[in-house]
Image (cartoon, rainbow, N blue to C red; front, top):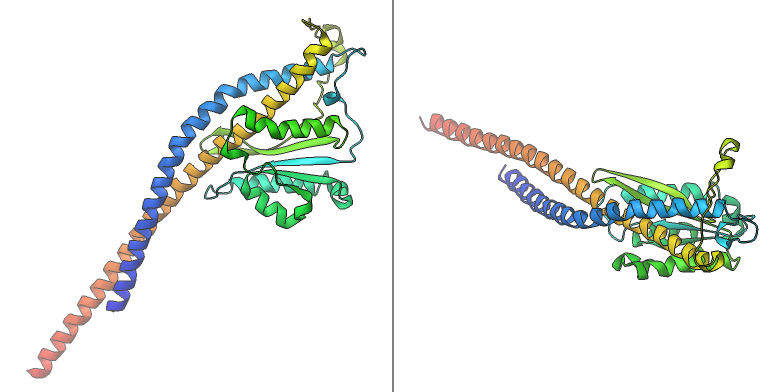
Length: 296
């Protein structure tokens, strides 16, 4: 019986240690979440408005001026960008994004995957580790896995610029991004969006007369040449900031749940410990009474 008591005591001690770790991780994630949430909530309205403006501009361009980023062509080569976190312990957050990516890869892009014309650009180690094993190292672009170590606009723009250069050169015909959209600490949505070519706004016939008329200053070509890449880089930056905030929100929620589960387990173990202790005491008393009766 003493062996059983010792075993339960060790388990209680072990769960207590685990609970301290999960509580500490929750506090760290909560602190990081505040900063990450502020970054995405401040940027999102700006990025969304720029994205809307870009779609309107490309939809309303006349024949004299075009942009390669708005031209849809037959999809013979494509890239799927998968944005996950570098670290785990954040519930099903990374799994859900990877599932969304696999659904796109093995659904819409299945023919390209079969022909070897699909590449997967991974940002974040969790997605890279799984997709590399599933689809082979030769199909995965690993140059931007560690972008989360520096989320500055200049650093993130290296990945978006690579995609834009490849698209403009005709090396790829379509780019899709799978990432985690942040809503709040408890809710994150795995989201799949088309990055390139830029989707145009569909104008109904009744609205054709109210077509937006932009005044370009200085020249249309000169302005669009600089404006469109900047807007696309901003949109891509938003994908990473969204995922960054979602990661910390998911981890904080997961660690909070883990701490609650540890508390429930400790209570259960203490009940078992007390039962075992009572059984041991009862057995000892029975042995003493039995020995006294035998002597009497």
